[in-house]
Structures are given as C-alpha cells and as structure tokens.
Length: 93
Image (cartoon, rainbow, N blue to C red; front, side, top):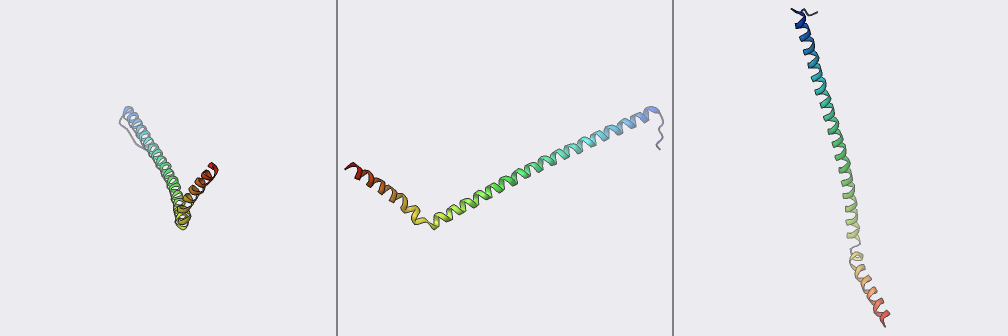
C-alpha cells in the first residue's frame, strides 16, 4: 500500500496514473492500426506481384509460340493480303 501525505497528493497520483495509462493505450492502438495498414499494403503488393508474374509467364509463352511459328507469323499476313488482292482483282473482271 502506498501512503500519501495528503488527499490531494493521492488524487494527483491517481489521475496522473490514469492519464499515463490512457496515453499508453492510445499509443498501442495507433501501433496496432499501423501494423494492420502495413499488412494490408503487403497483401496488396503480393497480389499485384502475383498478377505481374502471371502476366509475365503468359507473355513469355506468347513469345515462345511466336518464335516457334515464326514462318507462319511472317508468311500468313502476306499470303492473306495477296489472296485478298487476288480476290478483288478477279472480281473486278
């Protein structure tokens, strides 16, 4: 038990202690909120990173398919253009 010299000293100590507890609680709540925000940001970044990695994988696969079929990629547009031109020229006669 703590003894005080006067009632005013006891009340002052009590309210000082209460104020200190309020400040500690507020600091703890702010820290908890900051940690939640950090976790939310981390989750968002991980989600974005996963999406970018998936996009990268798809792009790499597309590039591989283009390289594997390079002859078709180069020849087909010209072939299509010539057959379309031939169709119009033949139709004009």
